Image 1 (cartoon, one colour):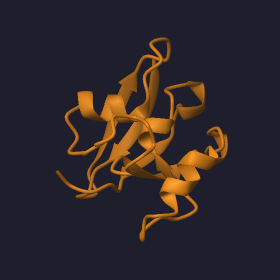
Image 2 (cartoon, one colour):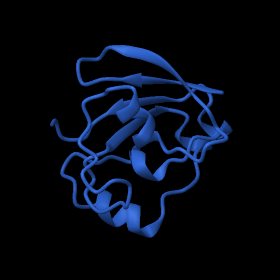
Image 3 (spheres, rainbow, N blue to C red):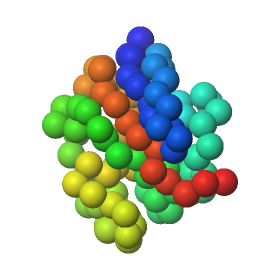
Image 4 (cartoon, rainbow, N blue to C red):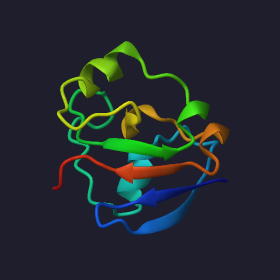
Length: 106
């Protein structure tokens, strides 16, 4: 199990545990944990409604693909710490990371 922290839009933080052997991505874990996140395209990096900021652990995550970077580039509030939750597979690299939900509200 991988443990990381999610900060919601109200600034409240919650520790989450997710299995790293089921090929889940962060978006799926957020939706299963009932966070208010649109994730309209269902994980294809086509909508950016699963936008998160990586507050801690960004340097340990795999680099964003060109497709993810192109989608992030369309967001007015994207930063160097922006990622799409659908593109982040649950892995050891996430252990101890802190993610802040930044995507649109439902």
